[in-house]
Length: 113
Image (cartoon, rainbow, N blue to C red):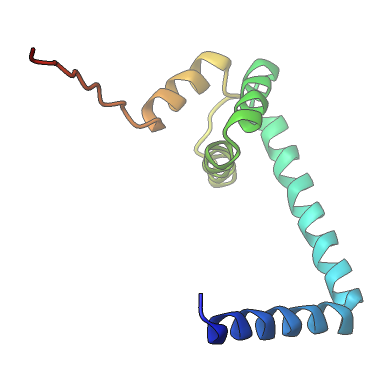
């Protein structure tokens, strides 16, 4: 990294710090909105998923947070659009996860002697 790049990074960081200090109430409001949105998502999932399926999704969230977030978003979209006729069971969630998870490629390496 050159001196110009470091100076640019420092300048951006200072601007960011000044914005956050200048308007702390706006940041608090933004955090509150994010909490409300998360609570709303959790309520929708509680209505759309059986307890076992919710537990499985929470387990996935601990190991693969980005993947769980994308699955969660898909489930919320389905629930909001009315495309779910009943609550999703654990087996249905497993099937959905298998469809969404990319297939692993297997490699075999042979050594010649």
